[in-house]
Structure formats: structure tokens, C-alpha cells
Amino acid sequence: VLATAVEFVGVFALWFVYFDDIPKAGIRPGLVRAELWALSHLPLQIGIVAVAVGISKFLQISRHPVHDEAIVILGVGFAAVYVGLALVGLSGLRTPIAPLTAARLGVAGLTAVLAFGAWTLSWFAPAQLLVALAGLAVLHAVVAQRLRAHTHVPRH
Image (cartoon, rainbow, N blue to C red; front, side, top):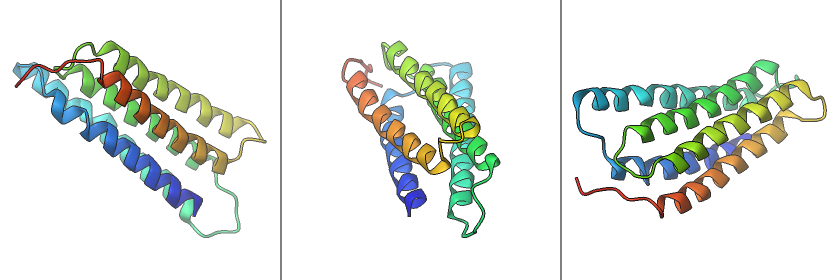
């Protein structure tokens, strides 16, 4: 139940952040910028798949504890999502982009720290990591919404 709730919260927060920003921000003119914008979606998409795989490890009914690889997959997946969002944002028309980029890379870094903690600290359980990652996704969505309010996107 926890994994399903976390997955819903995380996916909704990601959906909100992506679709409330990226389509409105457009793409900077030029073939190279368009190619970079498209390629920047690669870590984002791989991250989404990795998060789905990591969460599926929690959904498997078993008497065994969650294995370390699920923690690594979740950590790398969530971090890749936010690195991808930062890269996609850099190819958009939104200005200033630095605060949003810093927030996205900061979330990627915090995700790595949390995953490392869950992987190495015996008292930090994988279920706690799930809750922390969902909380981080919601926090980022709120912060990104506020940061976008102080940006500008020229008319396409």
C-alpha cells in the first residue's frame, strides 16, 4: 500500500512539474537546441522507467526484505528524472532558468544522499526512503511552482 501511494504521489508531482512548465516554456530556436531538447528527455524517460522498476520491487509479495538493488534503482531513477528536467529546462525559453535548474539539480543531489543513506544505514529502511522520495517530489513541485511565478516566457 505504501509503495502504491508513493508511486501515485511521485508520478503526480512529476506530471505536474513537467506539464505545467515544459510545454509552456517552448524550445529555443535552432536545430541544435531542438536536438538537445529531445535528447534531454532521455535521462528523464530512463529515470521514470527506473522508478517504476524500483517501486515494483516493493510491490512483490515476499517474506524477504527489499534488496539493495531496489534502493539503488530508485535512487538513480529519481535522480535521473530531476537531472533530465534540469537539462530539458535549459533548452527552453523560460528566463531566468538558473533558479529552477538549481532546484532540480538540488533535488537530484538530495535523492542521491537519501538513497545512499538507505543503502548504508541500518536504521534507514527502504520504506522510509519511499516516503522521503515522495515528500521530496511534492516539495520540489511546490518550490518549482513558486520559482516559475518569477520567470518569463516570451510568446511563441
